[in-house]
Image (tube, rainbow, N blue to C red; front, side):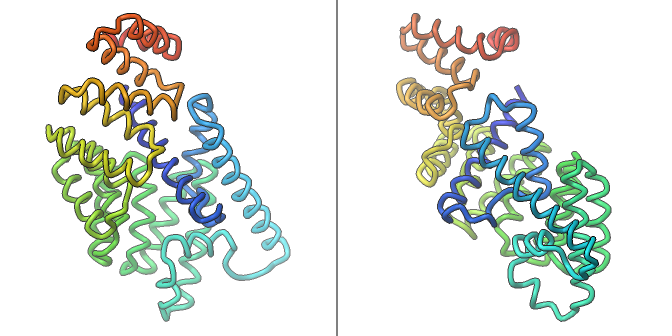
Length: 321
């Protein structure tokens, strides 16, 4: 169940990125890169049947662009062309924006760019420890650049070092206290460590800086729910769905909260929406079955339990018990 919840949270982040990609008229700059792409590629191999066709296509396109850039980089090296690779420049632009070019230490920045390029190639190849070492070198070259810590935090988090990721995000926020994404990611790392109050504080900061941050509303709703604030969680899920009405997990979690608050009909509507967007979610079928049973629709409940069992097999039986 924990793995499925983590998968759904990851899938929700993916859908939010796809939504941004479509809003920017499918700009290649929004495609997955580096560690996020490596993770998505793994999910595509392991749980393809749980991904929609649009999600599969988005991941596949990101892989094709990455492979194309790697081929281009290899060709540049073979021709002996000096300088920073196109892939590294894309990473730098994505992470640092125009602030990167405001630094006067051109030689140091060039060296950092090479470590960035190396780190993301290593991550794409599954060598996460090698990627971490490359980011370590970038931090040593410039310990006062927030993006260095921010990037290293992603690799540490992916390696399971949540505390190390938080330490890096603390440094990033010390250097750049107006980074909504850093607050959001620190909040997520804190929540994974069970610090829901700290996570709530970080999500509040992220939303203060970016009041249209869909994922921050969604995850703040999760933190509030874990803290027992069902009404606050409901408000956040409402905001997340207002900003992105195609978020299956937000419907699913709002259904849980509505059911706990006694709004069974509202919960049923949310489960219907969740299954419309993700028709292969056994948890949503199981949850809808419970609500239907509470509403007296025993036949409908039986149909949903059968669907959950079909999709999950023996795992659904254990969950029901």
